[in-house]
Amino acid sequence: MALAVKPRSSLDGQHFHVVIIGGGINGVAIARECARAGKRTLLVEQNDFASGVTSRSTRIIHGGLRYLEHGELDLVRESVRERERLLRERSHLVHPVHFLFLLNENSQRSAMKVRAGLWLYQKLAGKKASSVGEMEMARVQRALDAGHQWLMLNFEDAQCEFPERLVAEWMTEAVEAGAVVRNHCEALAVDVTQGRARGVLLRDRITGKDQRVDAGWILNCTGPWVDRICQRSTVRTSKPLLGGIRGSHIVLPRFSGAPSAALYTEAADGRPVFVLPWNDQILVGTTEVPDTGDPGRTAPSSQEIEYLLRTATNLFPKAKLSVQDIKYAFAGIRPLPNSPGDKPSAVSRRHFLHDHTAEGAARMISVIGGKLTTAASLARECARKIGLHVEEPKAIAVGPGSSLDPILDQEVIEIAQAGSVSEETARGMMEWHGQRAMDISRMALVSAELRAPICPHTSHIVAEVVEAYRKEFAVSLADVLLRRVPVALGPCWSESCSREAALRIGAVMGWNDQEFGANLEAFETERAAFLHKPSRHTSILEAAAD
Image 1 (cartoon, rainbow, N blue to C red):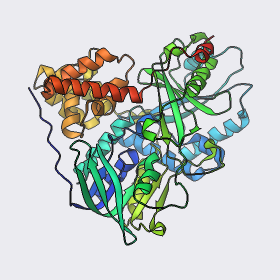
Image 2 (tube, helix red, strand yellow; image 1 turned 120 degrees about the horizontal axis):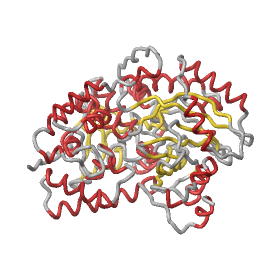
Image 3 (spheres, one colour; image 1 turned 120 degrees about the vertical axis):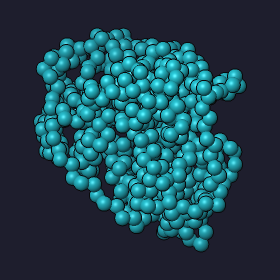
Image 4 (cartoon, rainbow, N blue to C red; image 1 turned 30 degrees about the vertical axis):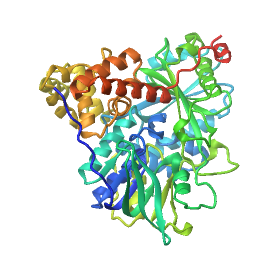
């Protein structure tokens, strides 16, 4: 069987009430809000949705414990409120995580201040958090460096292992509300005439054709590319709006003694660092390094990789971790407001909406900052800024964390039976696709090719890929395997997995030999540019394991 992907129609000459440039989590959330308010909305993204900062984050939905250090109580309240809303509304993607705050005799933060901060954090959350069990705490204690006196303090936050999936769901809901979305469609410039932004010049990277659309409002949600859009559009700001800060992560295998709880601790320089169970691996991050380079080419430096690896080896010396253990490293540019002279850790994580009227571009707004947790509240604020009527969601009734997991065994059984797939496959589909899992399972019943696993190491099936192409606007193999059905982020993915997946997907999509080769090559190129394998010949890193 072969499934053709519907070609995209031209946008040239069309008028939209709102044009949003940038398809990360903020841009997609704003597009959904504007479309739901009844406005004709266009969302364009130069690469793929969620392929920029969103996919390079620490993947935590948190209330902002560290923001308490800088006195940003309002930001903490907003973050906690949005965290609880996501836990309830997207509970298949966002789930509670138990954290241990680790301190030792060398920590720069005092135990008294941390205890007070955690008490206040819990009060702002308005609920009693469940805690890590004594057995797990004892297991972590045994694995930690025995040369230190460790204090372990409990708190609770949340994790979204795959924010790419959250973006895909919000994008689908935006389209259902009437939005038009285009990935692989670059905004060349905003057309500014007579003191007002009036349209956007676009280049469809799939067809190579240039197009122009008219717009009532233009929202620049391009994250670390915000200043570049302004420069291309001759919108002269008095100073750069952003001060880019690179954050890097390393991914390790689940080593002996690896915690099942998430850890929040200090690196040697006192910076907060997370050690998180993620996707059957361990995610360690992050760094804060000024970076004014091309956001599309950002990569973790060897110094950052060393810093993160040394942090892990100092915590868990018995694991004997070395550079060879690093599965891959990745980096992204945080689009923080330009704050010359401030330490990166002191720059506010609050978002700002910059109106360009004073710069001769009325009805153009640039979004500065923002994070996974508060994307929905940013979207509501942005919609109100352009005059849309947006009601604040009803208050969340906060309850115990254990009630937030909705994945019921009976639903998994029904999905498995509907598609004649295993319960493991059904559970995996439900965790990534939520309510749409049943539709995907029914589609899988059509053929054995659709029920086949994407590669031999995963329970996720080819039917999920077809859904990504048909209903989630995937264009390339990387759009699918890195973001819509992100099996290529898994612990055992290799070049042989890429080839096997491309063969199985190509058979269903009807690719010829040339299309198969082009898809596979483009996928491997994008994956290598995103997920960096550190050099095995870095002596400094090797020394970290000694």
